[in-house]
Image (tube, rainbow, N blue to C red; front, side, top):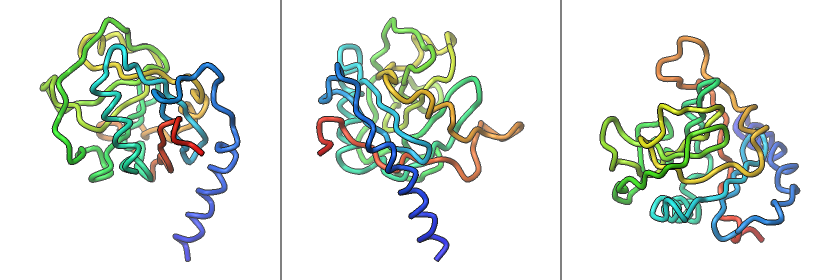
Length: 187
């Protein structure tokens, strides 16, 4: 019964987001729409600088891989990370091979979306990504920029943050990406 009530509550949070129109100039074939427990986030994918990574994000979105995946690592003033549709805790990836880095000169600033990777291996990005809350120049040239938030940074700002002292910025009872779609697929 509690699960049913939680599901209904999550749906009620998403309904207002679904009614929001997409930005008029958006290339819908190269954008993802993330309906979260806090509202809607729209990300323009940068196919010009990270074509392999952008295609992976669209592929996984179309497969439903990102649906109900938590923002497992949310560090106030830094970034919100998600995309582990395998283990739901930041330790997993997808069934596809890791991607070779596609570094660019685009700086990590508020609203930029980057691909997460494992440890020191620059060619280990797979499914996880993060959204910047603020400038993060230490990430420049170290992670692949895959896009930028064009609508919904206010939603990103509302995501539940890790408590002080939380190891690695992990969040207990995190907000989730309820549904992730390529914008052109939305009916």
